[in-house]
Amino acid sequence: MTERDKYFMGRAIAVAEQGMNSNTGGPFGAVVVKDDQIIAEGCNSVTSTNDPTAHAEVVAIREACRKLKTFQLEDCIIYTSCEPCPMCLGAIYWARPQKVFYGCTKEDAAAIDFDDQFIYDELDKGIDNRQINFIGLMREEAVAVFKQWEEKMDKTAY
Image (cartoon, rainbow, N blue to C red; front, side):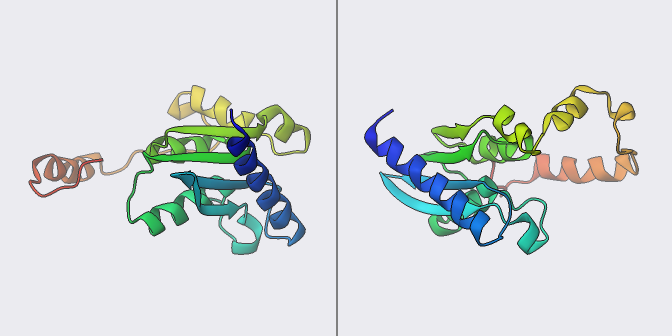
């Protein structure tokens, strides 16, 4: 960890505070850095946009990908004010950054009623035992599209 890392984490924390104080959403912020420059910033904007996926990391990843014209952030580092929730963790893995620095832990978030443990618990359950019903439907038709993808010659792999 360098002084520059501390600078970028400080910016992620400041973005979290700004978003919170402007009533954009919860107290979370993130920045995406490439070549020692901030490419994108994001604060939680779930409540202001009525978008449950508008977590700080997702907002920042979307903006960074838009600016860099890519769907992967392999040469980037993400700084986030809190350990990512399961959704953001998935988005981060799909974006493939070099590394992630985080401030608060998931336990810190749970202490202020942002507890994601129930999602981790749901992931460990069989699909038939989850709180929300997941019902398979038209698998053959759906698999046919997968087969087309598998045979597609001009696809962009990711």
